[in-house]
Length: 324
Image (cartoon, rainbow, N blue to C red; front, side, top):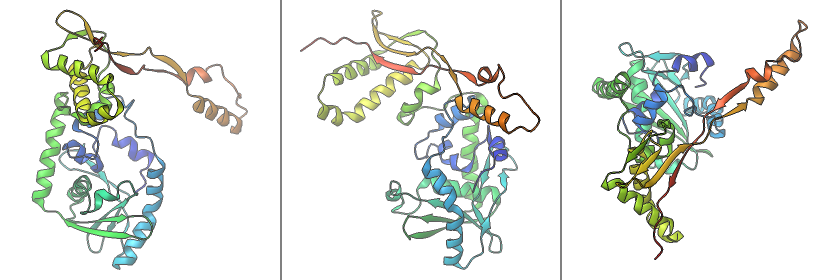
């Protein structure tokens, strides 16, 4: 379903059904910690940029819904409302369609080649959790997950959810919201590694490494000298070591050993001012199209479209290993 600008604005600070699995720690690639920071931050760094696949998926929804009706003989229609849980207003959802006469919700998925293998045994767990959430908020027990696999392969997966399913899901989501209310970050995992630089802001402080973290630093220093084949074979261990160090450092900039020697640094580059030239161009276009004789250029145009972009954090190994 196409989400309107008003619905997007209403969604801020709330959890949509597509994020329910993430809140439970059973998402595809986002963790509870990621969702926590997404909800509690100012939004910078957590905006989902619309991809070609997303645009195609949105465009295909109406066609897939028509094909679903043709295949089943149903008369499902697009579902435009935003649903809100009566007891917890931060739980919302947008459904794709509904067969009102038979009381069946429809969730549409346009599955590309990259994700097709994940559907070999039916819809992935995170999609089923999304469907359960929609069922819970609408009060409709049955949800048909309609998956289009490119070419001409359309499959319908029927799910019926019980009040017990709704209660279990609701309790799990409320448990996550408890972290938000307490302003307490959920436990992080290796899933969070690509995002740790966004979770914590550089404070310029230092912290001493315990034995386990120091070992991880030395392991990564040794890996830097290894050949490509060895690096590939130790990829999982490298990920775990990087996660251990970064998760321990958090907002600290410098990691020290017992003697005060720098093991790792994780510092932000300097912020810089960036002009939103697209915004400037839109301003000029609006001035050109104005019919009331407005000025084409104002001194504040560029100033009003300039913002400060925070520097990115760089994670650097400072250990100097002795040559063999």
